[in-house]
Structure formats: C-alpha cells, structure tokens
Image (tube, rainbow, N blue to C red; front, side):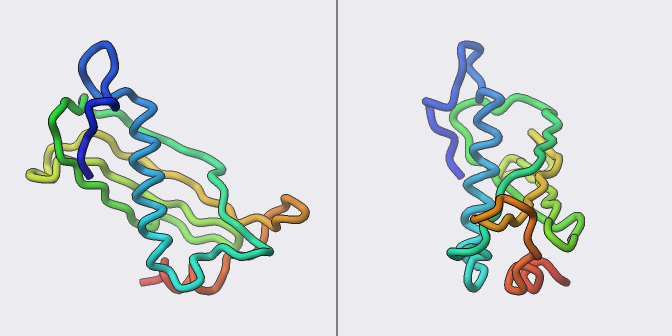
Length: 124
C-alpha cells in the first residue's frame, strides 16, 4: 500500500488514526477473497476491539506491507493479528496488534455464528 501525502500530520509522519484505515483496507481486500464475503442480508462483521502497538513513525514517501493472520477463531468472532511493515524490508516494523471482528445479526444487532465461508478461510 502506498502512503499518501494527505495521511501525514503536523509532525510530518503518518497520523496514528490512519493506521486503522490501512488495517481496514487490508481486511476489506482479504474479505473480497472470501466466498460470500461473510456478509449478506442477515449477518455482517463489525469491529468489536482494536489494539495497536505503534513501534515507529511512518514517513512519506513510503510503501508499506500489511500482514494479517488469524490469532483466534471463535463461535461468533475472529481475532485478526496484524503487522504494518516497510514493503522493502519486513523487519522494519511500524505497528503490530490485533482487531476483533464479530459477526452480528443485522436485525437484532446480537452476535451471530461465524459464517462457514469465513471459518474455512481462517482455518489452516
């Protein structure tokens, strides 16, 4: 992913809130590869928690690599671990942590079983 000039703050590095946007984009790209995308008229995923450890600032210009991996697979949720690193050198770590995605019933807003397509995409 390319860091954009507009992502910078007054300190001339990527604003911390943009890290969440980068992670959202990476998750959406991943979801597009899941058959049925775990999203239909009945259920949809929502972010229940986000934990980010900021390791070093991202400066412009930069190309970043976002790595996603399953940390925990539950009945109604999945914890997706993440790493944001320099694309050219994956040892240059900008951020790590995890996001918990919960699937909810669109009508009731209550947790719903994880769609089978998502469970299969997250299983080894």
